[in-house]
Length: 419
Image 1: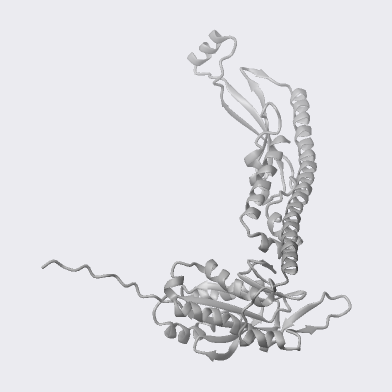
Image 2: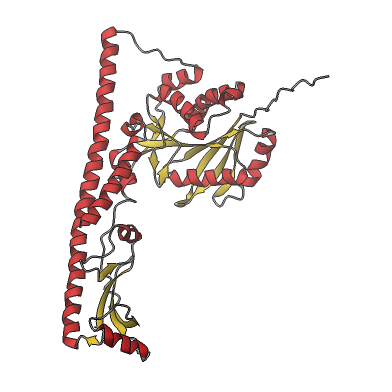
């Protein structure tokens, strides 16, 4: 089973590399079980299993005997008479249950016996036995005995592989979970240290606030309205619409800064622009805005976590045409859980004529399979649409489409001509 151990070492190294590529603060804000499932679920190897719904099959094949026998003179006589001997081979096919992981496993495990006569494939194990060579034939009893031996080797290997894979899967999740918790503990200790410093120096951290932020902070009504669950349901929350508009106003403050100095952001990609928005949201919501968080079936650009729920999901895209915008809507809706009622698609537009883009887009959105009806147009760069939840046609999701104009004209200096 040494080869299987090597495979798991490679898997663990890949996961650790992915963890190390992420910001520690991001890891600290994720749910450990969700993060662990995201890292390991698609990498864990499923056990090799015999497919009992299919019968084993045997097949005889032959090929020219190219090995020199002991009696070379007799062999030459046979060649002269055009009676070159054949090797007869018996193949036995043991079907396995199909699994996408079997292909990966086959890259590390080829033969499962020392004399390389029992070979692993994605969907089967093949036993290969030479039953006739140099006119020396094995009798049926010998073939039966060898067949039973090879079958036993194959079944024993399957059982041992199942045990080894189960053990290594368990170790993998335990080790990776320990690594995640270690990072979280480190971030927590560092935050406590900073809190103690602030407490010792007795000077509060400065935070800039505008009117929208003050309105959110001073409003005594809860930022979310609670959906009362039944006795067996898990608690969840829905965002109040006015609060959603306040959050968009906060985002809009930064977005309009982008528009004032577009050249400053010319070289930034989607992720860079998103991270700037993320920093500003965290200044207000105290670290509860998370980039690339896990929600429903994937990783979102920004998830605003309020109290106990993943409430508001935001997708950030550099504008690349209406079809890609429709794809962003599908992506956003796939991230929403049944109770989540709002989403935002932010588009950074670097092409000319943004007004024409926004004017024509509502008609394009009508072709989306979830489209329900047009919503309000708040200002020239902000409108909303309603969409049916794929999980429940009775539930509507309100998606807000927000645009920022980052177009810059490339000005080239004229080279003076010599007269």
